[in-house]
Image 1 (cartoon, rainbow, N blue to C red):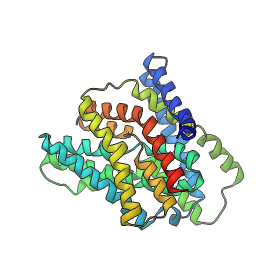
Image 2: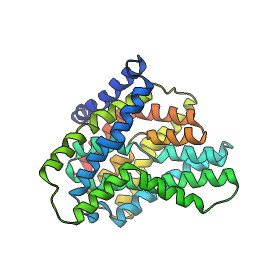
Image 3: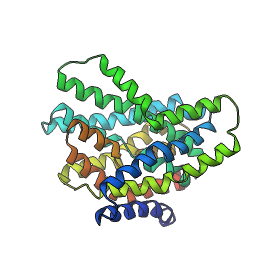
Image 4: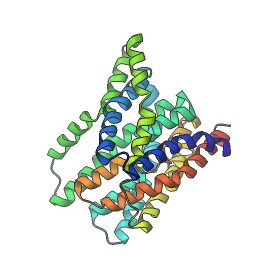
Length: 312
């Protein structure tokens, strides 16, 4: 595990550096916002397009993989939702906690880190996880909260969801990349070099932005945040691993990437949704903070197990 820790440590050290810069106000919240926009709309999009353009749809979409991942997600999502109801939370609050239990930081942390640590064969599976998170679970939480508040479901919500998905630069860049790859044409050398140069900024920029954004968050409601962190870092990868390896017979290499992606800490976009709807933002912020800190060890342990046992 120590060799894997030495490989993962630089990634988390970048998060720590961003946290320090935000904590001492060397990097202001406004600066963090602009850095996040740069990574989200430019650097990460360039990386995702470049990855996708060199894959065909079959390398990303695998029905058994998707079924296994969704099975594991919904199991943990339902468990977190049920625990929320037992604590007499409202449906929006319980659903937001369930979101924390299954939505990992795949875009900003998973794509840059897992591709480096697990190799180029991780690209297809990790992009599949990212797409399922963005399309399926972002839609579910929006529908649940909107329906709970209005007392009914409106079909117009689906139009809003579709537009939101189509405007998401990560989804758009993957779709454009796959479309280009489907033509069979190679990406022109100058364009490929431009994308490689811009995409190279995604890893340090994203990790630094994660840390800087965490500097403004506090660990309130720690007991709940610890429970949600356990769901995300332990139960989620365990459920996905069981589904992939036992129930659906997913290829062991792809299953390993799925498990590693499921082991990632709570995603920052869950906080954005919580703040937007005014549903438990402090609880979500604490879950992001605690799960990210704990993931230094848990993600390292999961990757060590994958490479040492599952892929041995």
